[in-house]
Image (cartoon, rainbow, N blue to C red):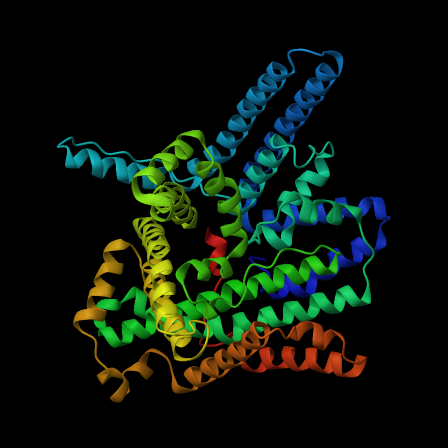
Length: 528
């Protein structure tokens, strides 16, 4: 069992979990889910899940220590009339110390398991530029599944406890389940403690309505992955592993198809994860909101991997922006450059921190650093350009939200996204630059005219993939226009509701990319 998309998960693991969950008393259902989650993680990661347990123990202990310090402060404040400011300041200082310790332990584990080799390469290269010959090499231990996801959830929990927006959980099992629940452990979404912890541990009864909602959402996710993402892998993998053999036109198509593949794979996995949560009455946050309708790169990242963007916004962007040094710098910039451009200039500091972290979060590689800096530059510059573009359109009587101008903005954004994803998928920054160079210098449609394109992927596979890409586009268009497709299906009569579900499942069975001639593709974001 390596993912949700295996037969053993669907016909053995999940049914057994549901049966055990329904069979035990309500007070024990949380333990059933916790055991199932650690078993699922063990099947994929083996003994490396020990690191997940260490992180959980650390977070639990430090949050309890924070809670004890907060209670001590409140008791002291109730007993005195003077010196309250000093008591609060002392408590805040100690909470910050505990928070730093917790964050360092969790980030330290993540860095040690995923990034030491990459940082060693950077250090070797940097010293080489100074004429110092040194080589840093670290053993690769391997990380447990979902470490990048549960680490961010652990940090958000500690920060929220230190901010006193939530209370520390004194129940270790509930906290452990929040961090390890098997539907989200592979690819997210990145939930907050208040969103899922209580619901999961309550042991809510399985219901026909929640079961159908979960099954429908899972079926849609399987359709996206097996009908589109895994089929497009035939073309994408060939192009990105042997780009030197192909012209710029085929590489450009590869960038477009990879973006579609990534969307259908990742959003499909989110559908499965959210659907699994719905079985047990837990509502996970949405991670995508029709990103290909975005008009700017900033808007794109408000619609794509939403929970990651929100995490960086709440726990990196705002803390950096509201820090005393940055606020002082903003005041000076306002005086020097005015109220419009001064804050925008300084906001680049927080934005840089966000996109440096975002790039590194995705992986230890130069292409990921470039990916982060690429979007940092686009979004930061967009902040300067957008007000002027808005004013220009108003002066010329152009409605930027309708017609040809909106189409232009959307197409422009998509082109920027395709280029970004090319670098993201490339096997190193050097490969990404070479592929981008071929797109510019050796772009040709000859490979489409002479049929070379169909040596990478058959006409039948292209036809099936593009047909279902169109279906996904129609599905997303409906949501963009305010039609909740899933809710409409769920409100249909019993016969029609199940007929639609069966039709989706049978379509996946008949047209899905699996079996002879296809290589099973693990969920793409599971590596992060």
